[in-house]
Length: 297
Image (cartoon, rainbow, N blue to C red; front, side, top):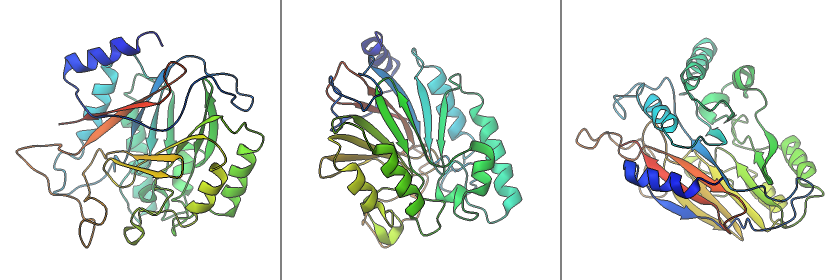
């Protein structure tokens, strides 16, 4: 993508600001298990934890946060190749009809995005109450893989099981998906919960995540992007790097900072503090992916 530098210069001039980080996903010339060599740099946008249907004091503008992010993404000078929502599209309800109404409303909201190549993952708020049935009615398979410009993307579902497990069937699918790929193939994993034990007592873990990480460990260039914890967090398990995304509804406390993980209170003097979306640039021109956070504030 020739306009990467121009895009970042524009974001700085436009006042988007944000935090840039690089992960350990090497993206130089490398084999990709049959997908072909990287085909030039590109970027995608990650949004997470929109919790459509939430109503409460943690965000008095609960119906305004997502549209604000959509407007900002639509205003980018260069369109992302695709957009991914990493779970908790809607807020939890035990009423199946209300769940479907919220999923439909969320779908209607994201229809305003100019970019129509959109990937979805469920969160436990969307899927745990009915094992992902309603989610699949609206958005299809809850785990899948795809290739884009030489990068292999894997979307995992660690929420449709109420216990927060991937399960044997999905792990067998993952093993088959990875089989035959070169050890230096660049791989990006998208998921909702962290695959490692970040704060298990808060549900910030995947029950059998270590099995997924063991399957990914032989591959030298793996980066995981996830949501669920409503804040940035950067972690490494061996050579695999993990990056969580901020929420678009309310921030949560830092891992282990207190006895619980209730939403942080809304600050009327600094509205939307802690709410953000991110873009991630990948490709052949750099040795590392580059991710930038875009606060709503």
